[in-house]
Image (tube, rainbow, N blue to C red; front, side):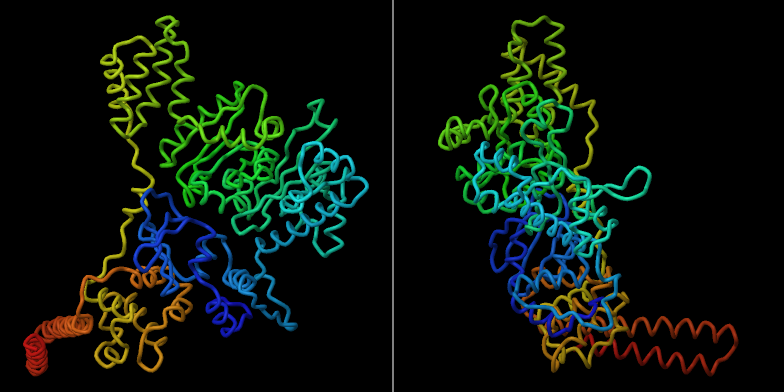
Length: 603
């Protein structure tokens, strides 16, 4: 197992200080169910929770996609970390320092580019933040934020910064701290010149908004022009980091790391469009607010949201662009399982300006009276429809039918069908016939969840699988099996290998040490998922030791049966060669094994 230079004792201490439930709860909402916790899997799209976390065993497993393991494995998969990186992250969380040997130097291959990028991002954020607070050249940026009502506490809490109007201000700073231009470029903070000779800063003369992941690690930046610089429209209002190994556009929401607790309390997540809109809401005591990062909402956004909450309020400007933005999200939400509602602000207002003009109470009042997304979308499509020509009505019906077709609940679909027919002044029966025709013509694509959850799992002999489950769940001691079962007794070599590893981790013939077992098989992608799954899967038997001994007997009988088949093949070969003596001796071996099977079956 690639642990780098981290001692096993250090790994063990970190495991003892870290609770997997606490770690996983930073990434998704868990609900107590019996002795375990369940939630929606962060690794694939699903509507019914199949992701299980066991505080007793300190394991997780998704019974939908098969992902599983311990707390290190969870962090490695969610944040794409190598094992040493996951240990360091959790070590920092547990307050346990991890010694770095002075010689030999750390293998460069163990220092992942992702870890380096996160370090560069943090150093850049501190640099930008210090400039905003203290540099004379940031005076206008500070004044602009003051005019926009951004409080000093907010600036510090969100680590807002400022990029000087220099071509190489950040470059020089980071290079002075040992970072190469190539590393700075890989982090998305510098751009290679067209002639390939040198780099220049990506962000210049902009207010900087650090973008964090759910671990509150800075993964990217947004830069906003301010004051007179943005009035002529020659520069884009916002500039965001490009995609890097730690940042993918359309996968993150601004301030979600800070909004998570507020989401739980409020029971919903409010999504606005701009950084300053989100900041204004947080300042106004509305902590369940996030912002998109210069992109439209994506299915990945909703997959992220559904880990925490199923209710979303979208806040849009009341202009045409805001209406169109709301309409574009309808299909996305219908197929996502997230319940969406809409709040449209008065003309010319965004959340930031609305809160300043009318106050936090008025904004909260708006949020308390949202309109269902479907209601809003259909109202916009058919507004004033009764006054339109038949050609216009047919065009509107063409827009409405795809929306109605995606409504899975028949009662809800019937409700909206009647409403649309009334608004258009057409017969409900006729509109229903058109909808039925549309549904018949549309190709029904398989759901992503179905594709994932029906993925064929490995099939193992029942008694072999049960024996390993009993062993992993501590229902049978290793010393009960050690003299009775051999690895070669398993017909599937993967289970034989798992049995060998399991026995090796047991102390004094007692229970299997699951954490040690997971470490031993970390690199084995075939048997690793079986450990977490079978350690958490509910057993269908009650008399555990008797069941285990029954499984042992069946393995014994199967082994004898295999030996009989092998001997019979040798008998046939001896018969072809005319070797009667060998045939007689081999037949005795067959009879002996058949007697052993009969005795075993008789108890």
